[in-house]
Length: 225
Image (cartoon, rainbow, N blue to C red; front, side, top):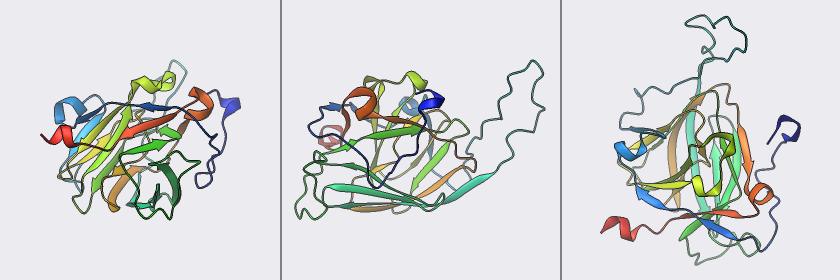
């Protein structure tokens, strides 16, 4: 999406057409090896380094060493909760609140559904941060799924993979990695979040760009056998 198409998103009232197809992505158990192209596994979130990208320069003179990456960090809790068929998130570090997705087609989803079938998360939006990495650590050691893509601005739905994480570690994704926060496998979860203070965001709108919703599988029985 070029600069003249940039827009502000209404994350609590996303405009999503009805009857969109669902593009299901594969799920794998996260290991240090298969996660390496996307980021790093985090066991000590208080000490883990979160990279900040040095400010780019288009001329022939280089940016001085030790400059252009001095903006510091934003950090705090990132809270997630399911409400019926709807997954909400609130990033207290950057003071944003979102509807992250649904476990039912959004035109049928109800936040008062007493018996939701949470076997998938349908997402309408994703983003990446060119200015630095982002760390997510489960403060209650509950399992979660991180859906990611590493193919830059020409990302396609088939580039995505979901990583199952058992709650014994967190993840720190590299700058430029596509994501839509984290999907907890429990009704409510708290994560420690740390990211660059500039917090530049490059977004993709799946219904507008690809005519679909991305479907993140949340049934992990086959991975646990």
